[in-house]
Image (cartoon, rainbow, N blue to C red; front, side):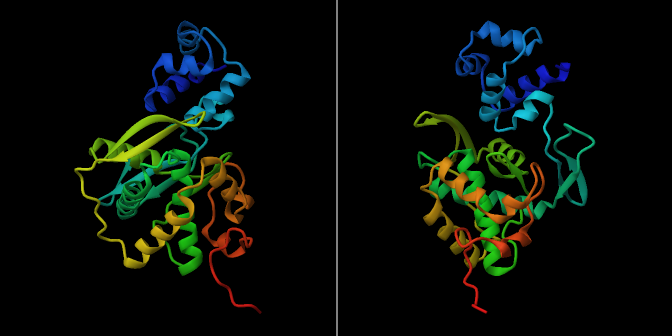
Length: 265
């Protein structure tokens, strides 16, 4: 394995707030064996690599190659471009205007204030809620709500800017990340600071009503259930692994995922 493979695993662990002991216990190995892995003195087995991919929510290929295979995210601030992630210079750069970042934050905080305390609402479910909120709104009204960029991952649509935005909200003291378990599955939950009011300025009544409708119908689904639903949706089905999902594909959805009433021809 390349040297960066070992550093990559350590960076994922540190970035997601896990201790060496926690990862060792979940891999069912000793802490010293895990330390040897991070130091490049021990190789991962295929089963261990697969478990790490699930824990860190990256693909098995990413673990094996030692780099994220997602596009680089750039936030635009005051017409200047701020680099957020630089794991692979050869990947496409995706620019996110600051106004979209702020709207993403407001929608995410609103979602968390409404359903974040539910035991099933971890990162995986949040990803899919954001996806359906965005893509269903586009199908219904032919305009974007957040307009976030999503890629096809093994476990379903993944919003590219999520990690940077949630980290920003944590730094601002608006959200706290908590590691928990839902039945036998590990999950990361995000709880809104009760002392911070949720700002809904910039969201229309129509947008808020749509978000509430989505939360009412989807927020009780488990990660497995909502992932299964996303896997039946045309934007995810037609995309290649790690490719961006196209909003226009919502107009070719099957009946199971379509949310718009179309006139019969």
